Image (cartoon, rainbow over all chains, first blue to last red; front, top):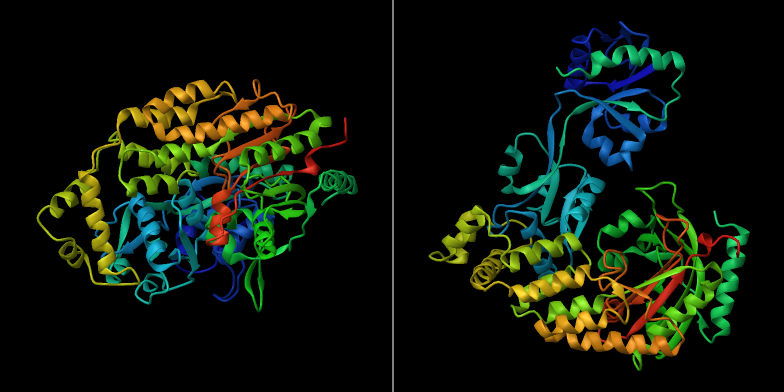
Length: 230
Length: 363
């Protein structure tokens, strides 16, 4: 039976349930709020409730057939992600942009061209590479490599990333922002061409999951409904 | 995994270099990450396996021999020297998981500034001879030409330094040349900032932009604003010189066949001449080794986008029947890298590596 992994709590779970509901599949949790089990009505499918951050790994391992998670998490967690999962449908919620931001003080910096020049200046002045705090190491590194930015260092920040500049543990940040208010409160501004990835909740299919003929048939029947433009 | 057959082939190649008089050198597999990151930047994390040592901090599994061999040479202090080595290297393969993650490299390196042309010819000839049974296809390049062109441009030291820094990053190099030659005008935001700089001080503009936050000070922002204003007043790089850069990036031919067109380019950019003389001297040294330099493929910019810090002669040996595979052998001159690692004591160095694992059975 097709295993569908969905986020186990919060608004992401509710919106996922609504999204499938609008397409004729009723998802529900069974028992108490603390029990991570549930069912699917309307298709031959079982529900697996997982932390959104575990879903990319479970998809890659083929332990679930379908999964709902942020497109940023899939791209960050899975090398060569397109070979591991297929994007079935962007779901239109959970929008969050991964962006590069620098202090507002930097009147000389609007773009990646400027950031790269500042990296050279900073290294010559301070004797070490300009530090960018992030938890999205792969996405940020690939983005900066593609744009030919040099002489920076990524430093890991798993939370309160906007505060790292003020605390002098980084000079710039790459983080998820949905409104930009936290950035402004910390005197940071987004580079004009600093959008690394526009993320949203997305339904993925695991290419390497053990798809039986029967499971293939179930998905084939559902596909038009799941992938139709809403 | 490295097969016994690959290892035996590697040992035979290594013995051949040793018999030719190279000194065997060994290098650790576990390397401190700091020097590699300082040299190659964050990109190395996508290429090298990382691990952690409780006392030494972040470590990397040897992604190539260049850095440890240069360090071993600097510690020994003996110049000139010729080295050979054999060992495993480890590479992450995120883009193509079918490629090998651990494989052998057999290498040959010369640290000797007395006759660079002869050293270049020696490395190329010895690796070519070792590979001769597999009939590989050689190709050569010379990044020294591009570097000489950049350093000879009629523009500000700041612009030359910016281009020199990005010799190995084609995308960024292109953006910089577009800007410095006036092919691309400043965008409206930048034009507005430059207009403000005509009647406001850089310090005032920075102070009005936001409060001081982080290590980069208001003075540093003001200094770069001043530099931007100066750069805006700098005339574009002359079109004739910009054409020389373009031609260098696209020129393809043979090693001796390229000399004529390069001499023509030097009439527009005379600073090229010493680099062309070096190419000619190398071609002569290679001819003396019996190499067919009149038919040897040559493109100045070859080897530009690899991770290695080649800044002069570059070469590859590939196999014609397996396109898309990595070369059987690669090499080049890396004087700047030894300068970066050696501080004051820059040592001219040239070398190359063979991958025995790609050779297959001796035909």
